[in-house]
Image (cartoon, helix red, strand yellow):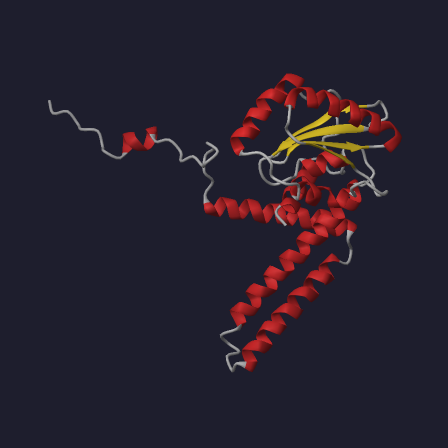
Length: 255
């Protein structure tokens, strides 16, 4: 009896492994990425427009002004039809930039003054930043957050200054015994002199000098593990909306 040979395409296909990205996670197709991004932008727009009623008109005016300006250049160079795609492209690009800034401003206005606001901002930092929220705090929800990054160790305090300054000093002493000569920065979030406003916290941290290499940062992380993680609960998201707000947050990070 003749044996049937297995088809060449069936076995490899069933045993094939998905392609992985640089972080070891399965790669997402381009169409799926576009769909995910579109959904996130839609949700971010819905949340932002609730607190920013002028947003639709501002975006429309931005698109019209930029597209018109580009098209006028096309007319000036006697190429109006050739400049139509460019006018649409630059109009959309300008609209996305304005939307990102309005969304970010709206998000900061909503979280300002709420417990966990500084932690929310820190967790949105782009790059290799290792955030431990609530490493010290009070029952009144004042908190100190610890961030490891290329600048070194960054301690960020939020709450009533008279209460958190002592917490910040204690945490700085504790960290100094572990990190040795690694730079330690302390930041108090607020609007008074010597403090960093919440809407400038991300920029302030990102502008700190890069004192460590990637290898030194990994070694610092291992040493800091001796201090443990959070000592107090920090609200997971100071903004209303739960999961929706986390989507808006991711959109704001990309702007």
